[in-house]
Amino acid sequence: MSSLVWAVGDGMVLAKRNLIRTLRMPDLFMSSLIMPIMSTLLFAYIFGSAIEAPGVSYREFLLAGVFVQTVVFNSVITGAGLAEDIQRGIVDRFRSLPISPYSVLFGRTASDLANNVLSLAVMVLAGLLVGWRIDSSFGEGVAGLLLLLAFAYALSWLLAVVGLSVRAPEVVSNASFMVIMPMSFIANTYVSPEGFPGPLRVIAEWNPVSAVAQAARELFGNTNPAYPPGDTWPLQNPIVASIGWIVLILVIFVPLATHRYRKAVRR
Amino acid sequence: MTAAIVAQGLVKRYGETTALNGFDLEVAEGTVLGLLGPNGAGKTTAVRVFATLIEPDAGHAEVAGLDVVRQARQVRQTIGLSGQYAAVDEMLTGQENLELLGRLHHLGRRGARSRAWELLERFGLTEAANRRLKEYSGGMRRRLDLAGALVARPKVLILDEPTTGLDIRSREATWETVGELVSGGSTLLLTTQYLEEADRFADRIAVIEHGAVLAGGTPDELKNQVGGHRLEVTLSRPADLSRARSVLASVSAGEPVSDAEGHLSVTVTAADGVLVDGIRRLDAAGIEVVDASLRRPTLDDVFLALTGRIVEPPIESSSEKEAQEVVR
Ligand SMILES: Nc1ncnc2c1ncn2[C@@H]1O[C@H](COP(=O)(O)OP(=O)(O)OP(=O)(O)O)[C@@H](O)[C@H]1O
Ligand SMILES: [Mg+2]
Image 1 (cartoon, each protein chain N blue to C red):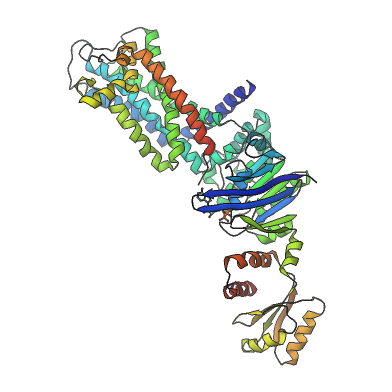
Image 2 (image 1 turned 180 degrees about the vertical axis):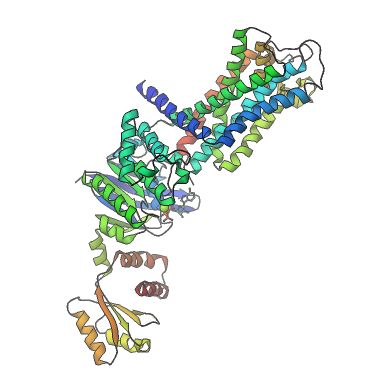
């Protein structure tokens, strides 16, 4: 029990270190704010005005997708940050200290979560500006945002495994995009997967990103009969499915990342 | 005396490379051991095993009586490590770097802060305390990294080339700080490229090559192993070299080593009177000498004799290397 308290305490100390680093790299920090604003505006105006739909506008349908995609992309930072710390020998130093491997990984994912809170906040503001609304209740709206954050947090652990396996920071973002590009596009992020060719459609329907996007739409009250979710189980029960995915990802990737971390040495 | 560090038959392979190949070591508590060896000998690999960063493929190692594999966590509580390359956070200030380590050693917020300032002062970094590491020079970084290893006043200190890249003043300051820690009962394992430093500061030395220890002992023991004293003369006319060689052959224990500029060096059997005797003989043969000295073997000689013998089997190339050494 007390070792868990230490692990969390050490994790907070390390998360603070990561956040200080981010704040001291103004170009990186600004781009992490501008990117989400830009995607929101671009997608809203370019796609949002191209496709007309009855009832809730396509723009509103679209924004949940933009939110999901942005937090998915943000998780790359987790892997890149770890790889950089390995390359600079910081991980060697941390590993020679009497701290739990969980502390370092928890610290990393926690600071990336803080980053995602910020991204999501600016996207919500930008969204409200272009006419996106939470058409459900305040409570459901908050639940939707929390679900997005929880999913982003789980993905951080997945990308941590990528970062700890690939190691050269330059390679990490490419390797990560090989995972997250298909993950975020073969989904219902921007269009309903109804029209996807056979196998892609199956993937899209079972993709965790689709479940989370659909769950966010439901919680925000942004569902649209013109874009039916499809009738597979995860899309019919997106909230349960999303929570299931989040738990599953954590159960697999927390131990895997820890295992990888224990072996990580600078080369 | 109990051993603070023990290694028995350590083996570590990286693919085709065998970085450690039956590495044995014992470092008594409260002493300084210098690990010497040419590039790629396996020094860093050994350091990493002791620091619990990598697990050996075979063999067994203990630090402070704790198994480095099975009790890695406890080992980490007793060691301070400074790796071959400074592991510092570029974006944090010197003080923040040390405070972070103090926090992670659970010194508490206040404890970590005061320890950080203590060490910054110790290593002459107070003025740079609030500057980010990316603005530090290489030597300053190195010093901060060393300070990082000392944060928790470790019982066993492991330093991989601690003074490489430091100016003389910083090197002295480092030895002073480390020396205090050792006189307080801590044990130090260090690797270094500066043989005269190892000679001065290490109680014992282990020479490693191809992942195994070739020789170990106190600096004096090792020097005696290499053989007796060396008589070195510089001739005023290099043309006399070959005659001088045959003259000195009578006092030398081995083949004389010479170069084109008139430097000649021979290993002698007995030190007593050999310098005067040698000069007399040269003088009698009409060979003019501008400089002559008798010196004890240095660790350089030990290093060359031990590793040169293994790396370069032909006598030619090893005497060539020695000849260069003599010139220097
Ligand atoms: N991570 C690694 N992957 C592959 N080979 C490695 C790795 N680390 C070390 N080696 C190899 O193991 C051998 C020993 O390396 P090590 O770094 O221990 O040498 P060293 O004695 O510290 O050398 P130096 O004086 O250059 O620091 C070398 O041949 C090196 O190439
Ligand atoms: Mg080395």
